[in-house]
Length: 126
Image (tube, rainbow, N blue to C red; front, side, top):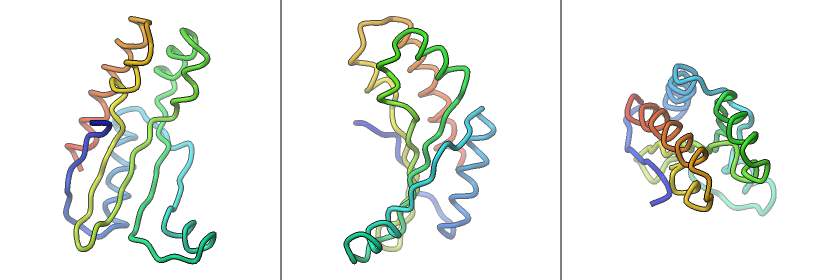
């Protein structure tokens, strides 16, 4: 399993707002937002469900990881997605421990565990 996922109630935009606030409460900022629905429509002319990718970053943790291994920047930021599947809305966050399994560094694995706990709190609180 790569993600921590939960079905949530509420209007899509309202859920996005709740996710952003929950991320902020856990010390994350949003580095980027990718509107997949809009991008697919614009680039290849297909209709798709609401699907937003939020690139979330907790600067102290990101700094610690990058000090340990600059290559780990390939796996930053932590993606959190809000999407609709039919009438249902979901929030899903990457599990950093799944990615940290590629590292031999105990420091990175420990940081991944701490970040994952924060992301779990985000998903559970929405």
